Image (tube, rainbow, N blue to C red; front, side, top):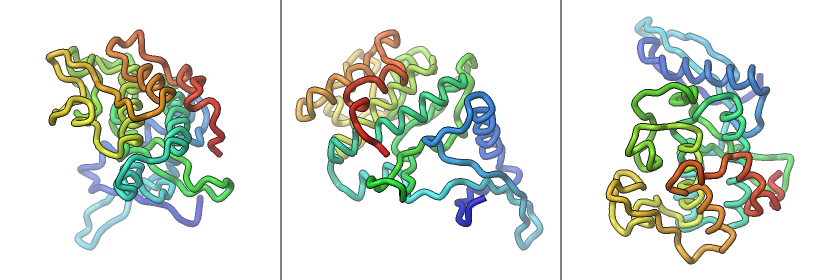
Length: 245
């Protein structure tokens, strides 16, 4: 156990989501081994507060903050070199989740945590966090997650599979490059979801590099068979030719 840990806590009666998160993390480890690009979960404990009520605590790896926090601090798009590194990190975590038969269901900058990297010239490693909404791929039920990052098939047909996570990755990459939530950037007006049911297509800005545009095209393809997998995206030159750690 490390000297410093972060704690995610809830009253016992409200702790089902946190307990489930630890269950998913342990299953990922049992199926595919540990992954550097998923936030480490160290264990659980129950404590008591002054009135005798029980509190469930989940011990986690300490992070500097979220990718959303970094984007907000920078105030505009991140340098493309940083975007490429963080994208590779995120895809490593997503690949591990998918290989274990899960869909994350809530990928967004708020759930990508930046952990300080003392062993590299690069300040942070991006790690996938918050597994509380993850589901096994074959489970069919009402969609989970944050509307802004939902894929077309999730909005239209309530289908949420691994390709849906890839759409969310594309949204995260666009947000890193543009420095803003991508709703207006895609459509020129506010929308609860990035995919508008009337059939409008996402608009990838022409101000980014051709390599980034091509990569985003494979993430944000409307039809799921045209979307690349995490494994395939890791071979794309946008991330494959970048030293990340």
